[in-house]
Amino acid sequence: MPHDLAPPVLTLSLPNLAATEALAARAAALARPGDALLLEGPLGAGKSAFARAFLRAAAGDSGLEVPSPSFTLVQAYELPAGVAHHFDLYRLSGPDELIELGWDEARDGIVIVEWPQRLEHLAPTDALCLALEPGEGDQRTATLTGWAGRLEALAA
Image 1 (cartoon, rainbow, N blue to C red):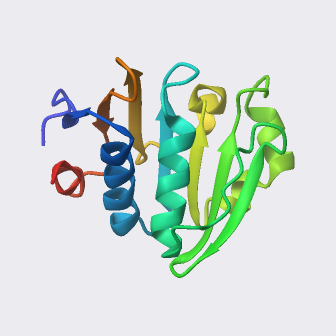
Image 2 (spheres, rainbow, N blue to C red; image 1 turned 90 degrees about the vertical axis):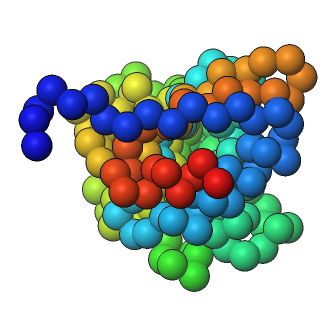
């Protein structure tokens, strides 16, 4: 396979919160231990809403308490498929601080990362990258890359 081929890109219009939650549920159904989801976008873009819906769907519990890890930096969840860690790296200065947060151990399960640019060289190359861009009200545009062979299933 030529090295100059760009990775597949999927761009979705998410007209409301329910559409964002449905995308998160589809991603949760496809996720497996060792996967990383990197959530990019400005403040208010819907990263936490996506992560919350993903974790609830993966847990099979629509009432699962999913606090934002803005202050704790990481929250762990026991899911049927294994452990998931939700990282919010907004307040981190760089990847060196990740070691203290248990990054290496967390990679055995599913990791969901808000503000993944703070990962720098630790960013998994096989991650699902989801860039959210806010629109009017709850409308979002999601641009997804990665997860070769599974990306198309997210378009449903």
